[in-house]
Image (cartoon, rainbow, N blue to C red; front, side, top):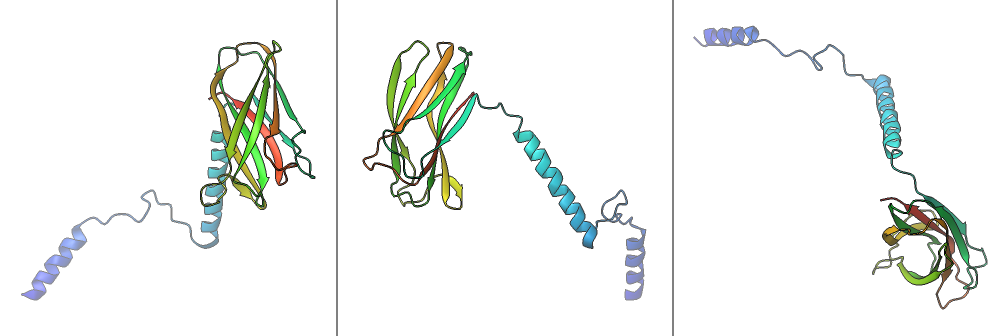
Length: 191
């Protein structure tokens, strides 16, 4: 009797349709060296696609950086940036880039920013750029000895006048000259 049940169970299993091997369209999963080539090709396509999609953003209106002297940044050394503005309707974000060495001895840097407008007027702001957290870890990203940090200085600003704008940057630290600061830059972009 058990023999008949086994035969009936076998015949039921044989009569059920078996799913085709993966994938259903008959292509076999690559193995060995072919699998490596397919993986490399897939990674390459993903990289190109990512680069293409990330390049679709609007380019910055201004992106400029200036190196600081290797002997140190004196408080009398003024870094000057300029740009022409024709768009008086759009809003912009102004960012400041600071690149410093891992050996920078402080957790922040004070900067004096002097804005000079096309009509001859000017305004000076003091900015405290916090470079490290409470545990002394640098907030920015970097490779090797240098750390890059970006600070949002003004958000959604609208330039009321057409013409040439200037931004002058000096440091406001007690140590003079300041060592371990490599570059300072500005970035102006539409949000």
